[in-house]
Length: 203
Image 1: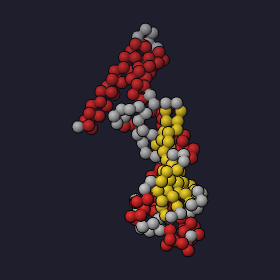
Image 2: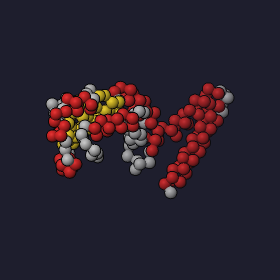
Image 3: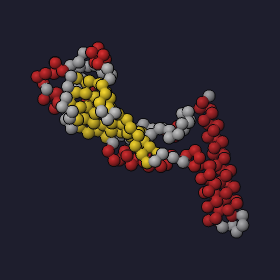
């Protein structure tokens, strides 16, 4: 039912776009037959129909691409193999039983960070915040694996965007996941996090 409603709305929107653009073309060329004038009027008609619904679409796409190219991706400062090797003599003591891991609950850190223990010396932290220009924004998500001395072992950063104005979930074109290779580096981050649990448990 919802899919049919979207289809009907899309057909109506395209029909309206065609009608308004053709009207602008006729009005623009009615007096002197100038194709430039007709094209200008047609373009104005296009904007009248396009902008109320899609005004933030292209700017948000460009902003999303900018931030993705800025710093998105996975950064490994200390590999899990190296970290485990450095703590080889205490691996058994660092393991957290599954039930204890659940009962530990959420840990909060200054700056909007929250997370949980991965093992007794490594903490998983994450936060999401909005970054952008004026009324336009994208969601910046960062996840970290932090050692007991607060040094960052691994971090992953991604950007996504969602509806800029409340629409009840109707503006599907304003939703996306992370950056283009986001699934790859988030999956790699999860694998590293699970390997530092030092056991087969996973969330």
